[in-house]
Image (cartoon, rainbow, N blue to C red):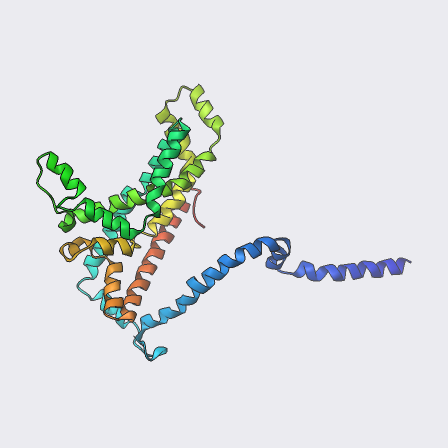
Length: 322
């Protein structure tokens, strides 16, 4: 009997050993099959539409010919990168793109934080919901319509802004033909369009703050501004840091559509950015390799920005992306 039980024990061990030797992924798969199946469509989307097209980046090192195809096109190495760096428009394009992204980060990033804090201080629920709804709506308007609205409002003939200026005796201003005004107009339109939508993150973070902290601040006689400074802002600081890191990585990724629709030859000095330049040389002139090279270069710069911001955040605080 003792020998039989010993044989049975050994058999059980032999059955369990393969399962114990299975990798961490397989154990996770067995315990979370339903979650993995829910995640599968998202995974397929990124594999097919995000990662698979990366193989096409090889055209940045080739003189791509549409009729020869990617692999049969002639290899030219770093020719198009050198062409871009030696282009006299390189520094103006970099300057315009960087300044437009920097202005958007400097003025656009704090705007939803301020709006979220103000909404959090509102005591009337009906008014709060009304403001949230009104501020969310512009996010769902297409860039084509937003650009058209901006051009109509700023028109020197019959535009809303010039009509208001006329009531004060100020002569009409052709805003869209003034290079120095383009960056301000673009940033203000971006804030108006997206401020409400971006507050969702911070409003969600505000709900996670312990109400007892506000009660303790009331007992200490703290004013509203003191509670915002010492309770609200520290409570949402992780969300602020994460979104700041992501926005720093997007400094050079200025949206093409709105800039392209709002610009004209009169304001190219400040409105011509890298994405619009890539469109002209890549799509209009058919130089796909040159356009892809510029786009890849900007992607590498954005990666450096986001990695540097994450590294600094990890060193000075406890919050980071990785």
